[in-house]
Image (cartoon, rainbow, N blue to C red; front, side, top):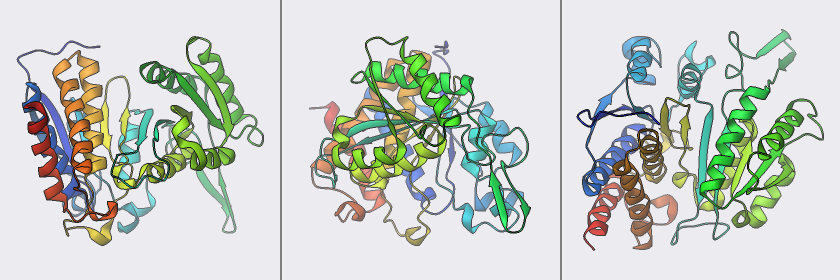
Length: 366
């Protein structure tokens, strides 16, 4: 926990990104402002920064150095989705914007909840779990190397990737998972593929088990990644905290987002000890960009997670109250019958965000 001067307002970055980003990121900021006001917390100063295709056009790169320097001076930031597959070369073949920022700031913990919302379209009712994904190693190119990409082709017909697992990285993500489980239902599931990737994911499993010894009140089990997909489809409601490596966590969190109702409601935060970034788990959805159709729930809930993380870091109960208000208001809005098209409703992005902001005020004055 760090001290925060009561006279200084928090400064949060806004990186809208591509596709639906310029719609859902401002929607999340609107809801955050409403929650901070309702909670009696200090307001924040929003700092817009260039990122994505617009930054390529204006700065020659999707993540300008000026953006990275500015982020280092901020308390936290909201990152919209990117459409790096549509970038011109050479940018399309390089590490994407979110990977660049995660690597630059060593955002080692990617925390991705999946919680069914009453009135939503959950495949498994009662789902309420969290994927804790190690965010810096594994098999993802450019995440796990000091220099180079982690992939190479010795001939045009052969492609090779290496994966890295280190004790230090596993220990810190395992502690993050077990600390979170203590605040939830005291259960951690380790996901690996140690029957085939014996040394790499075997080390991940074994180090997580070693860390578990420091948390005697937390139940621990483990599953192979392939078996885990089946268990989630059949009984996602029985899991609490799931800790796994980078690629497995990316895949499982998309699955659990859909199990909970929609990727449009799947939030996440990426954190280190010093920096935090809210980022919806879904992509940029360029096919609906600019049409007021995007579901802003994931970005809104990601922002609430960021408020909670920032409040815990600075001992600021006002931020944590605001985070709770956002969570409650989103659920109340959906239960009240308003949702976007992907959830079976007819509300637009702007209308849904405005309804959540109104629900926050209504909830405070009940």
